[in-house]
Image (cartoon, rainbow, N blue to C red; front, side, top):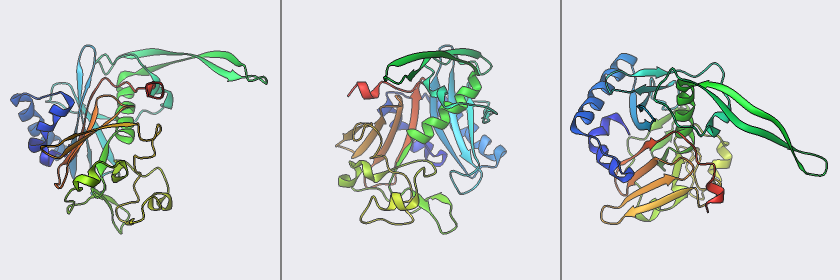
Length: 280
């Protein structure tokens, strides 16, 4: 949720069954402006709140250049007054998104994680139990990892929001006017809010009416399970589309058709849903 539109877009938190008090709204706007000034950020986004067992983390990120994916910084706050930088850990592992214990709400907390035994197949394709996978992780490092993964895998924007300019930068398109009602219900008209994982040619070939400046970004329609990774609801009265990624519960993406209103918010516990394939 772009800080420049925070006041207008906060009412859309009701689609995540969350609301903010007048005091929280005021603190958010003031302290994020201070953060933007102190960190010399060109653009700032409020991401939402990760709910812990003992305390919660308010989340935000910002960019120090026009490119929304270059030099991106992640921040957290627990009182909406002081914001702290989330730095990338010196060492981290992709297994961290398999951790299913809840966050405590203590950045200094160090947890020993046991993911159970690893299995391999013998020559007869019979599973053989191996060593148990154990490791220790600091909650602040895990928080950086989860926020990074949520942004990579669950944050999306309508086609046309992201613009790949001639200088190779990924910038926000100031002329985006919204998708039509018909186009807004199609998954291929939404892009991941991240640097493209796939090649330019691969992404461009997905559309007959492709534009190099708009369609170099990854679409969400080929996520596994296909056509079942997002739950889409539509408010007919206001033409508001809400897309919820089922693999990251608590994340919502919204777009009001025929307008420049869009955004994403996360109100979850930081745990990924690895059971999605067994739930459909």
